[in-house]
Amino acid sequence: MILHNKIDAQLPSWRNRVTTLLKEHGDKVAGEVTISQIYGGMRSVKALVTDISFVDPNVGIRFRGHTLPEVIEALPKPEGAEMPYVGGLYYLLMVGEFPTEEEALKVERAWAKDSKVPDHVFTILRNMPEDTHPMALFSQAILAMQGGSKFAKRYAEGMSKMDIWRPALDDAMYLTSKLGVIAAFIYRLKYGDKGEPTYDPNLDYGANFAQMMGVKDPEYADMARLYFILHSDHESGNVSAHTMHLVGSSLSDIYYAFSASMNGLAGPLHGLANQNCLAFLMNVQKEFDGTPTEEEMEKYCWDTLNSGKVIPGYGHAVLRVPDPRYTAQFEYAKSHFPEDKLFEIANIMNKVVPRVLQEQGKAKNPWPNVDSISGTLQYHYGITEFDFYTVLFGVGRALGVTANYVWARALGQPLERPKSLTTAMLEEIAAK
Ligand code: HAX
Image (tube, rainbow, N blue to C red; front, side, top):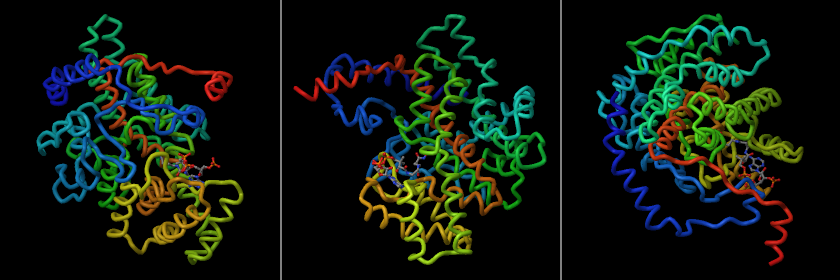
């Protein structure tokens, strides 16, 4: 497959680069860690490496060195579409180069070929209690496919460590090819006709997702492409990416690792923020029977903060500017449905919240993040069941974390095992 060939060709020079760096400079200090960082969720500790994406606090995400607007501009697009092939983005993340249209289509075709979801996965999901959260269903569906892992089989057979990335990449392709189908099935099972979606090999990943979800508006295919691309990767330290890396470092296969990653994404301080954000907007709409004035919104935000709650969709552990993933969605909404009522409220929030958070003086970043508006866009196209939104995030996030998983195996990254200290030891360090 094209991704195998491309990675194969790059590997000797990558391995040489890493070996040389380690051999000649392995003991150079790359960063320090303070007691506040140890107690503070390891914020900003430089302890991970990835070449797939980088979050510049003052610019935002760069995929393989390129900003989000550059990526959207440069990737090939289906005829008549505004947004690129998702397969093209996967190629960029895996290979580090922009694909030609034919190369992007090779990934798209490979996905179409492998898109059939094993029957037992649907059976398991159907048998789950009705009140199971869509993210729990998503995580279970992923884990239910573990038996098909080529990586686990080849590892058990004793495959060389140098080659283990190949079946890891097979698993990555096999898994990602099915995630759109599984997500659409969960949506239909919980909120729709309970039918099994069918992947159309003549359509790309985005258009397929739109048709499997049953969204009639043809614009939704572009919306899906944009959504999956911009949620794909955000370097290695966020909870979903780091969980994937940690679990994968024990040589658990991609199904175990990605299922764990999704359990982390399901937390309200991470991926679940998008559903909380839409709930917040809808509460505002209900409270003010429509769009509030800026003054009303300001009071509402202060009431939220004073009751000890966070304002969802604002703030970020790394970013110190408005999230470019927010900006891309904002621009999309502004050009496609500026009159949308929720978009109007989201706009007022965007004018008011940064001011309020700055005045409160706690949040290091008062600007909107990716989750601030993503639900508004889905809602506009009729995906109104916001419990489901984190599953959409998960389908996108798979692209980045599986690319990282494959490269971690290709470069032989070892078991992750940081050292812990006791509070008494930290007190002793502090006393010195
Ligand atoms: N509303 C209210 N308070 C906020 C805030 C917000 N949106 N953002 C930060 N703060 C508060 C923090 O709770 C913290 O308060 P305490 O000192 O009382 O604990 C203080 O400001 C300092 O926090 P920080 O250093 O600026 O931010 P963190 O790195 O600790 O946390 C979060 C980053 C994203 C978790 C945080 O900004 C937050 O809770 N935001 C709202 C939830 C949200 O939008 N999450 C999605 C983030 C994007 C993402 O990962 N998506 O998957």
